[in-house]
Length: 144
Image (cartoon, rainbow, N blue to C red):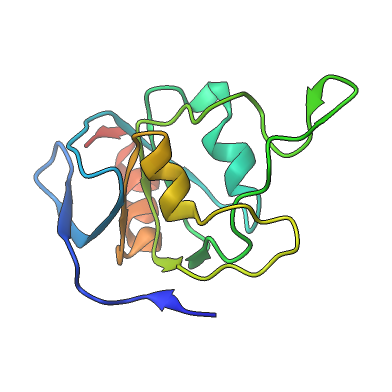
C-alpha cells in the first residue's frame, strides 16, 4: 500500500478565524469555500461523500488513513445503490490526514483521488485532521 506523500501541489485550508492548515492538493485543482464539518467514522468515505446531508460542506475525516479500499462501482441492488447514499459526491471539499494512492480491494474501480477528479471536487491531505476537529468542537462550526 502506498500513501501519497510526495509534495506535488501545496494546498491550504484557511478558517474564518485565520487559522491555516497546510497540506497538499488532490482531486480537482480548484478553490472552494464552505462550512467545515467532520466525521469520526473509521470507514465509509464513499457513503459520507455522497450523503446529501453534507451538501455544500467541506468534510473532514479524523481517521488518519483514507482511500485504502478505493472506490467501489455504482452497483444497485433492488434499485438502491449498494455503496453510496446518492448518485454523486455532495460535499464541496474533502480534508484528510493521509491519502492512499494504491487501494487494495476486490471491488475497487478507481482511487479516491481519481473519483474526486471525476466529480470535480477538491481535496487536501497532510492536514492534522484531529487538531482541526478539536478546534471545531471547542469553537463551533466555522467557514473555510
